[in-house]
Image (cartoon, rainbow, N blue to C red; front, side, top):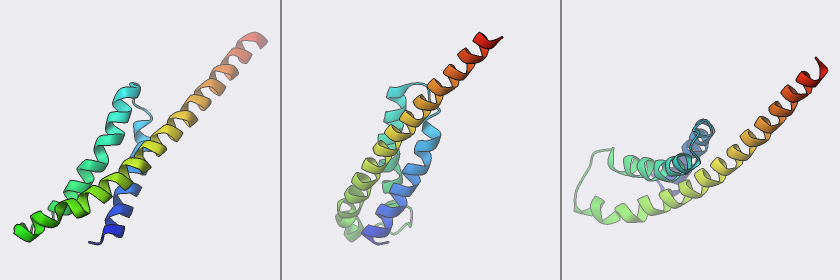
Length: 104
């Protein structure tokens, strides 16, 4: 797998899961997930194909580190934006409920 394709896979999967993580109530835990998942996926993408020899071990950092960094940035940015969207929707929903209570 190439560096570019691996980075694309890690970043897209991290962005997709950031939409799920916005439902996590704890902000700290949400960002821990956002930071940890790209590392996990990067490691799995590199080591799961199964061929482990000296050459594979030597090349590992040259693939895993760029995949992780690209995925980390994508994940943290997406988590931030999804959190902001969720907060804005929550505030808008609260305003709607308050307005309904005043009309009744």
